Length: 459
Image 1 (tube, rainbow, N blue to C red):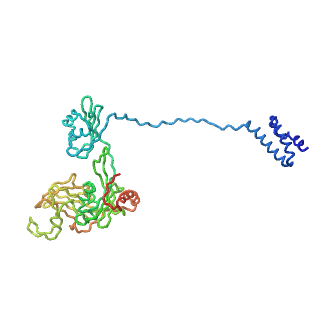
Image 2: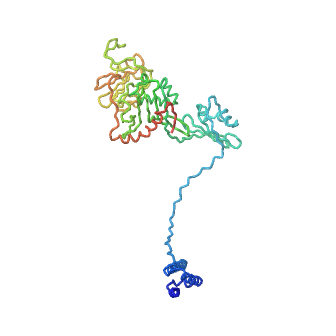
Image 3: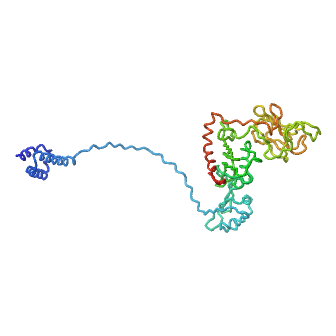
């Protein structure tokens, strides 16, 4: 009876289930069988599960899904700019370096080029004379054609331009070009065993950089008397490269000198007013406002004194300056920034220049052979700028420079007077200064703790 009652309830099934006679028949057969082995509740549960399966099977295939909204958007895109591609040079290029004793023939022979016509041209053409001025180590690039002849030759001349020779149907054609130049920073370091210049040579430091080093630290270190064995230095300077070849040395941008265990550091920084100078990490100007000497190399022949026998007047009189002996024509530099107040002749002083400096100071340079360019009243000069040349004019018994330092118009001994320091970094400039020198300080720190004091590196 329970099965009959269940059968009467079949209209409760989804209508689509009755459209499958095989499944309906199997469902009735299974229901009758379960009626004998399960309880009424269990039978009902099984029937519901079965009906659910049939319902799912009947609904899923015909289910209608929502079609997603699709919109076509078309936008024009700008094509990237394509750089023109230069055709590859079909010639074979060879690079050689000039060796001591090289000739045109030996250079070509070392490159396996046998070309008597090219040798004849390079030996006799006026444009090729720069080739004979190349120092050992300079690089040449040579190209050959399919027959092994010289097709082209190019090199950097001592003047700094790029000279090339190209073979044409009518012979060789010379062409001068201004090459692309770039500036790189070079770091070198060394340790003093005998002299500064010996250590600089061992570190392959250019002479101009060595002189700049003595100038930068000249206010803190006496390079004639204070150097000791074991002193170390590191210097970061500009090197100009053309076509991959170093062709010149620029400014020192950072330097460190360890003298007797005390480290002195200096960093090049340009102030907002456009003037640049060297400062230590605390912002103190590395230079005094005045240089002690108006010449790089000289010797004192007569010092400051209030009683000296005058060789011309044969009397005792004051000598209110310092005499520096040097050959005629030796450059004289301004010991501080200033303005020319006088440039001309003045009795016993001969050719003389007087400079007025900030505050209470002025300087006198006498017995000059000639003046520097544009030296006249009102000319502004910078510390270290050449203002004239050693001579023997006026009451001079030999070629020398008479130099005076005056404070409030009164002569003072330039060698002993306390000289003012140059202007330091201001509080407003300090953040920009600290940010600018940070990478330079990191470069110097690379060699600070190295056991070997010599280093050669380039960026």
